[in-house]
Amino acid sequence: MQIDQKKIDEAVSTIIGYGGTHILDCVGCGACSAVCPGVKAGFDVLCRKLIRKIVTGHLEEIIEETSSWGCQACNRCTEVCPQGVRPQEVVFAFRRYQANELAFSTSSITSQMNLFETGHAVFTDPKANRKKVGLPEEPPTSAYNEQAQKEIQTLMNNSSMGELGLF
Image (cartoon, rainbow, N blue to C red; front, side, top):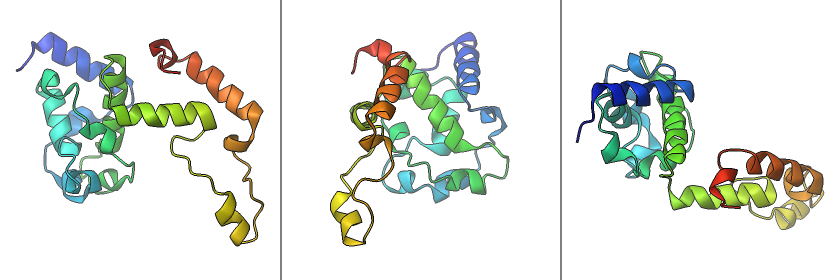
C-alpha cells in the first residue's frame, strides 16, 4: 500500500538525516543486490529492493521487515555501486528509522542487550583461545573493563534505545 507523497518525503528525509544521504541517487541497477551476502542468504529486502520500496512509499510493507537486520556491514554494495549511493548506509539508516517506529527485529534486541552487558554486540568468551596462542586471557576491551561498561551503559540509557526500556 502506497502512502501519500508528503509521508514519502518525510520518510526519505528522515533516512537521509540518519545517514542514508545518497538514497535518491539510486537508479535501481541491482549491482548492490548482486553482491550482497544477505540477499544471497535470503534477506531479500536489502539494497536495491529496500531503497526502491522506501522511495516509492511502500513503507507499511517494510516497516517490520527483518531483512534490514540481516546486513552484515561487509560494504560490498557500496564498493560496486556505480551511482555512489552507499547502500549499506541506507540500510543502517533504515534500521534507525525502524527503531524509532518501534519496529525492529528480535535479533537486534539480543545484540543491544549484549552491547549493554559487555560492550560488544556479539560476544564470545575468548579466554581459552587466547591462552592457547600465548596471549593474555583477557583482551583490553570493554568486556573486561567495568568502567568502560558503565560508560557504554550510560550512553545507551541516555539514547533513544534507552527510552524503550529494554535494559
